[in-house]
Length: 410
Image 1 (cartoon, rainbow, N blue to C red):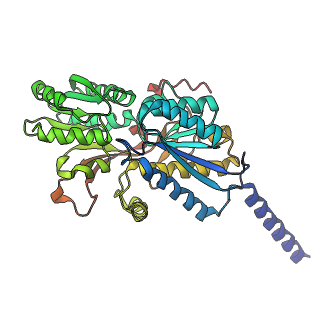
Image 2 (image 1 turned 180 degrees about the vertical axis):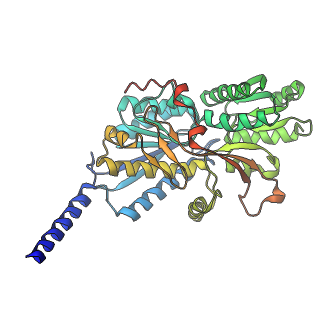
Image 3 (image 1 turned 30 degrees about the vertical axis):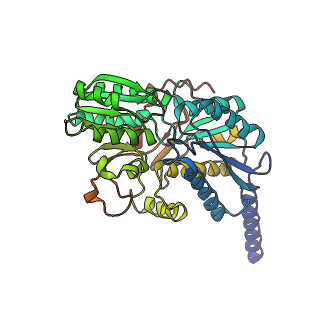
């Protein structure tokens, strides 16, 4: 009789496992999951993000299906993409097309802060999810935060809190700042000015520059005549490459004007070579050669794309993966339910270490890194451009909730 009891218990256990497995298959609104990558695929940010971010998202989908099986969420997972050309109006139109006509469940990436804010507005209006990876503006989790927008990799506060503080405390007390004159640059100027002044430094002057731009000569001449200790360059991508090239041609380093860069990607260093940036201290969300875990993913990415990944590429993979895991936990692709599954979630993957998705403003907190560009003489292999100086713990890397203007009225 006891033996019969054991058999019954075992059968109940097997049935329970079967039921549990079936519960993991999500209830999908249109029998599929669609991840939409919207970014710059032809302009100044194409190298740091662009088509390789689409590849990173495809890698995440393939790895997810390898782990859980094809159609594990109840249907196929598709990846679609579009080029917003860094134009907010085009980003707005593409986002509406993604949600309304192509069935996008989530929009990913979206560099260019003005375009990123446009998409956040569409996500709020359509009540569909949007995880931004490559834009920097703190407005996404500040005055323009909303229930359906999450900010994943970094922001201007994180960059200034790392680089602005380190350079000022390292003796760079007087700054001349040049910034691209749109949402990203304006927010960078504000965040860096705050970090510099809080640490006893002074901004002698700050000037907006056109975006995009390939001629910074008038601003560099002004910097030379102002004689600051630090030239703070807030440009990114090809604009930054142009500025650094001209900084070296104008001999500002020889004049004792240190270069501080607000946002630097490995592709920017690769474009000019490490000697053009040697000694520059910067803050990054991730580095491909951070440790064995990062390098293993970077090696797989290299096999696929023949280039080393930037933190934008790694962040897109991580965000896509965490979205799919959230759908799995929620048991549905319903945007409200998935947002709920993301809020308050703690995780640590090869990209985001000690990560926490803050429910109050949807800022993803994770470790950040203070890094320095090595001279070419210290580079041991291709793309080995930086050394990590220190880790900024997740709890200290980003804007504290007490300083966030997000009203969290959802």
